[in-house]
Length: 206
Figure 1 (cartoon, one colour):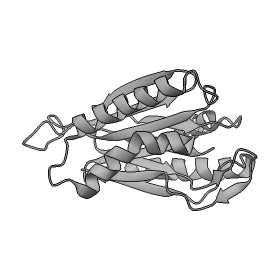
Figure 2 (cartoon, helix red, strand yellow; figure 1 turned 60 degrees about the horizontal axis):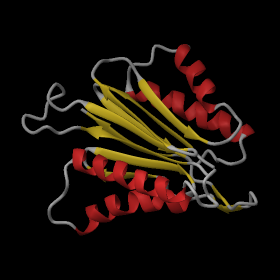
Figure 3 (cartoon, rainbow, N blue to C red; figure 1 turned 90 degrees about the vertical axis):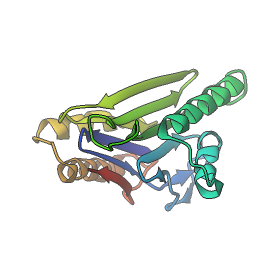
Figure 4 (cartoon, helix red, strand yellow; figure 1 turned 60 degrees about the vertical axis):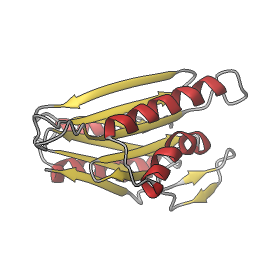
């Protein structure tokens, strides 16, 4: 599986992902597989779960960045991710993979035009997760409180560990949030063999 953590408030976003990939028998295929990408200057995407479906959902978004002279807005990109996620979910719902899991986190600035200030262009964090059916959770980050999301599929409760770490600190900055995330990855790698602590981060900060 994987561990993906995303967090932020009105001033910043940070997304971290481990890099381990296992086959269906649990054998390690790679310790350096990239699961977090910068879709553009103001948007980050990350994924966990069944790789073929995650790549199918995000492939058109990342390919668009490479080949297009007319980049889509972040709203258009998240609409593409949502429609791709629903299409994939509908296709596998009655297949042999119906009990698989895949999850996508997309976050960045809404970019409603000029001026590019925080009131007109607040950060967003969208979570698209399939586990028998697709669920969609959308948040806008309009204040200084930390909002965060986690994607993982192991029995180790990464979300509880991260929540406990956040509760012990007055976390309001990117640096403090990264410190909490680093500790979560470090702790998780000790007990969850589906992930490693070779973490890649992508960040956006005003």
